[in-house]
Length: 215
Image 1 (cartoon, one colour):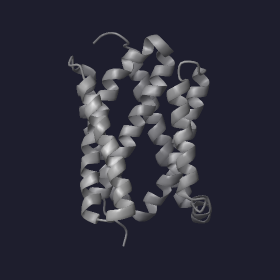
Image 2 (cartoon, helix red, strand yellow):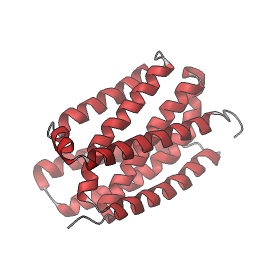
Image 3 (cartoon, rainbow, N blue to C red):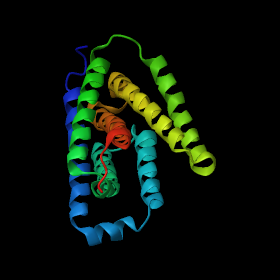
């Protein structure tokens, strides 16, 4: 796989930048307790809506979007996610957050390497994990409104781990197909955004399963 040799270094650089922004902004907000509670008092829904809007804009307008605008939206998304991450520093022990982050990074690296080197067509995998993702969303909604089962919640979390593990390999493998349509720079940022979502979602689910909470 020799084509697009500059794409992947750029993409993983932007991924690293995004994760650094998220964890740094989250920790910085956590260190200012008064400001953190004021910001979080806005509620999760407005924050989630902003994140969804940015994700939709990046997905729909990526071809016509200026490369600088793409980067700005990506950075804004990472900062907003960092706001919600400040709550994780309150809920979980710092050593647990670091440990789970390292585990997530190792799993991510292995699956990203597979997605980069494999010659297999992962289109079918994309269909399967998308169905799994829809199933998780529906199941989570039903559990929140009707069942309210901790066992079901744990089961959905475990399924989520496998779904986002699959998405890592799939997204790394498919991103090169975007280059002819949007150019290498925008493909690198958009690919980083997709992998950023995969990493964050995998991290959160592993944290829910194995993270040690503060007393």
